[in-house]
Image (cartoon, rainbow, N blue to C red; front, top):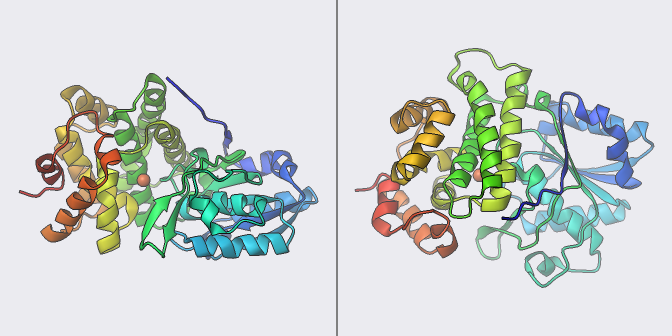
Length: 360
Ligand SMILES: [Fe+2]
């Protein structure tokens, strides 16, 4: 059994302000990496800048990280970071800015290298320090070494082979206040998919299960807010964000499994958001799992049955009808991904994948 989680995590209200000293300890000038506007709207960008200003640390801001960030974006940000003399990187946002921040930190540190080192497993993974501030509750990227980038040259997205962990993660649910309801629902479903797929996984260990167990119990405490049964408060946002962070720690050790493997083609072909696409396949995956695993996930997350989970997915993520030929592409895609096929703790064949995808 192996457990490695090198990220210093503070998960609390006002943690950027409370830990401004640590934030300022990583260098003299930060490159702040965000998407277009959400970090400015949710207050996280101001908090970070105020903390840096108070500590006499300079900053430059790159706010052009797109959904599914590309290698080209990473290189553009690197050039700005070098020009500005930045010696550490702060990524704020969902998975896209955080994943991009890790790759940008590598390219700033390796200032004479070209983009090919990003995908060269023999290349040095050295980076300048990275600080991450998640503002959605899905990816868990703040505690994983994973950075997924779009390769326009290959018309796909893929994880770089280097494990790049943040030095510091500042996790504060207040930044999720005001987030559009559908993004809250979809990212929460992504976290639930990470928890489920890590628990029902060939690589699961007692320690990864510890993260899943704690994550599911937190997720349960606030899952009703997605049904509109009550208004989400700060505790709910922090519960879901902490559940997502724990799910990140779990998948850092196990990886994800069949629902994520099936989701990639669904997202690529229909643009269905990531968490919603993963959730689409979760009831089918649970139906194929052992009774013990299925009962554990269903009951720990507060559902009465797999059908009850399916109904929850319909109501929170607004399930869409997907054409059979698209689902068949998902199945075909996964059949060509042997590592993902082997991630399930049971034998998988095409017929089973078709059942999980709801195909006859
Ligand atoms: Fe995911």
